[in-house]
Length: 212
Image 1 (tube, rainbow, N blue to C red):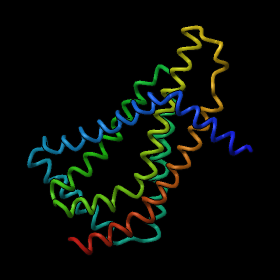
Image 2 (image 1 turned 90 degrees about the horizontal axis):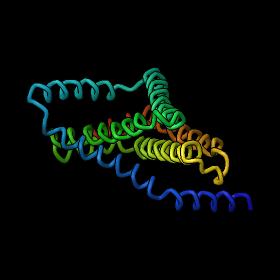
Image 3 (image 1 turned 135 degrees about the vertical axis):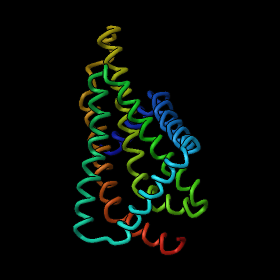
Image 4 (image 1 turned 90 degrees about the vertical axis):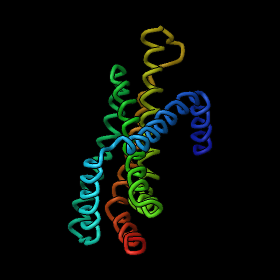
């Protein structure tokens, strides 16, 4: 009964704010497209520097150790949590909402740039490398970032309606519901960090041995 109520509330929330979710997803997608297109603007020197960095990174991944895994897990989990929390707190302050949108766009941009650069430099093999290096954790980090961004916009809109437009009839500010956004997105970010630290290197090493 309780689970059914939660499902109904969630469905109602999504229907009510469908335009916001569409906007947030579109903003992220635009960031991905711009990131992929930005690869074409790189100079030969910049590409050479990035290739050197990529080679060093792949060499490092090819020699995984337990210590590296623990160190990488701490770094990735903390980095993911900071990104989610920063977007969430930006929405909480309302005036910081533009920052949340910029972070959302930037996340899409970096994802698109990474995949675009790999594909541009090593063709179809780059797509496989990108799939192993980016896709596993992105299945969790992207929904976490999008959820955080959508929550930030929804909360900010609610604050503007109630505090500036005096629409108090809609009830108190949904602080508890907004907190759930942080909890769910944070949990996804933590799991994504662990995936990136312990699963992605294994997949990437396997792909490297096959295509490079």
